[in-house]
Image (cartoon, rainbow, N blue to C red; front, side, top):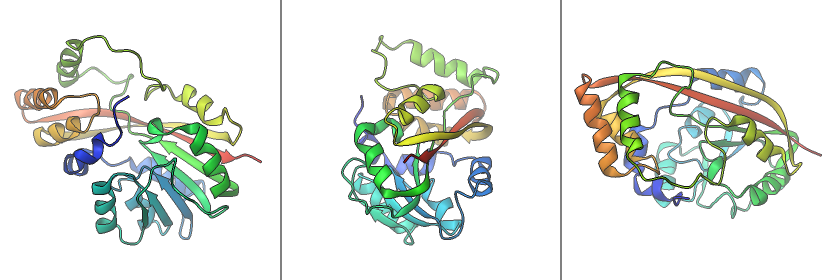
Length: 248
């Protein structure tokens, strides 16, 4: 697996290129009572704050755990209201029963769940929740766009690589099984939000630079494809959301 600190080395591109999480996801968390003023949240793998910011703006008290030094500095600068802990999800020291909600946004695939799930079980209050989601860059139900055909042509040239050790970004059922397998959490609900966003050439270059399995040359090639297609492309995305409840 690629080192998760790959992202810290590309913090600028990550901050510029990664699109926000869809409004429907935040509406769902608010409607379910999971996110409101005063909610005590621990966020693991906070990155540059794509999830931290909306939670702070909602009035939550956020502890943001982030191992990357550059990312942690960005978090402190952009969201001084958050308590930023420079640590990994496995090593962070969390007080017992101190949080109403734990969050992992586009980060859980990097965790050692045998360590993290018991840690969160201790840190979350009885009746508390663990919300797991990610922006999946694509939508299997959407039409294949000219840009996605160009992207496929790039990835098709790669040498065969072994399958990843964790489920893929669209394998939500497999993720539910992994997240509930230890008995520390049970699944409350699973939803998937489909959405689109228009991205410019520079945004695509930054975005693909942050993908841990893409080289800089491939990211440049993807950006040239956007130029060839008029300088902007419409991207189809999905955001699976898994809401888990703390077990006994």
